[in-house]
Image (cartoon, rainbow, N blue to C red; front, side, top):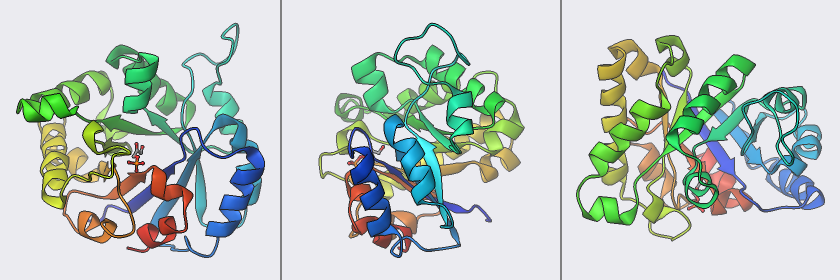
Length: 248
Ligand code: 13P
C-alpha cells in the first residue's frame, strides 16, 4: 500500500490575514515532515498572505470554497482560476457546513468536483452522516448515496487522484470523535464502494481521510488504521497540536 498520508487543516472562518501569518509562523517548525502532504485550507482572504508565508516550506495551500464559473456576475464568489493563480492546490468540496448552512446539494457538489479537476485543483470531497442517520442504522446507505452522486461522471483516473474526507457530522466540533474502529469501518466501506463503481486499482489509489474532533491525543490511533490515509482537522489545526497530528 503506497498511499501518501495527507494531513489537512480546515481553518473554517477563523484567522484574520495577520493572524493567519502568525499561525503559519507558529507552526512552521512543528509541521516539518517530508513523508506527509501537509495542507492548510484557509479562508479566501488569507490565501494570498498564507501563500507568501509558506514559501520554502513543505506546506501546501488549500481553499475552503469556490464557485463553478470562471468569472462574471457572481457577487461574492471566487473562481477556480483565481485560486490557481494564487497558488492554491487543494480545494475542500461538500463540507457538511456548506451542505447544511449554505444549502449545497450533491448536484452542485458534483459540478464542483468536476470543475476542480478541469481547473487543475485537487478536490478534498467531504461526506458523512448525521447523528439521526447513524442512530437509525442507515449511515452506510447514506454514505454510498453521497459518493455515488458526488462522483457521478468522473473517470477512474480522476478518482485515483481524489481525496475523500469521511466526516461524521456528530463528531465535528463536538469533541466526540468516532472511535478508530468506527472511522475505519466507514473509510473501508467507501473504498469498497469505489472498487464496485470503478475497479480495485482506483480504490487502492484514492486517499481517504477521517475528520471530526481529531487531535494530538487520538490522531495516532486513527491514522494506524489501514483505510485511513490522513485527517481533515478543524479546531486542532489552529493550534500547535497540529504539528503533533502531522507527525503522529
Ligand atoms: P473539528 O476537527 O473541529 O471537529 O472539525 C472537523 C472538520 O469539520 C474538518 O473539516
